[in-house]
Image (cartoon, rainbow, N blue to C red; front, side, top):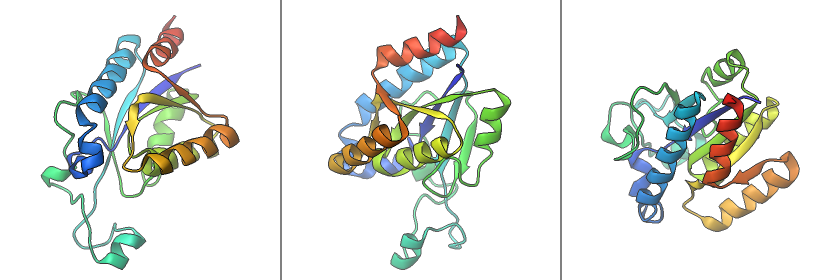
Amino acid sequence: MTAALLIIDMQKAFFEDESLGNQQDALVEACNSAISDARTEGAPVYVIRTEHQRDKSTWTVSMLDDDQGFLFSGTEQTEPVDGLDTAGLPELVKTRDSAFFGTDLLQRLRNLDVETVVLAGVSTHNCVAQTAADAYANNLRVVYAKDAIASTNDEYAQNVLGVLMDEYRQETLGADEVRRLFSEQSG
């Protein structure tokens, strides 16, 4: 089994929210640990970022309804959160919740014969969950790096994860189990 790590939306804008801001240090540490484990074992790692254009051409329906955009290309908000070790990692830019929407992520994963994606980042109930659902739709197995995901709403996160884990047979693993997953593929 070949696994890849996806680091989703670990950008400054998302940590302006107090609930995520309070978790920033622990989440960065957990993501960096997962990145290090994947790199050590030669597993692919992709940094997924959200960016929008000021002309509203990439805005979601809710952004259009509210006439308020964010994560504009070229702004500090779109930069990786402080301390995240993304040096040398490929980055993909998306305009929707799923890392698969409007990117070449699926092609990259298929080219490397990836069968499982390990998800880390924010927010569990939005972008992480939508990426997980689309991974399932593309016959990829999904593992959530338990210590490396966070949400602005824990109740939503738990409800969404419950459905995805039950219905799509996805699993949540701790740091040691994620490390073991990456090491098993290199051995």
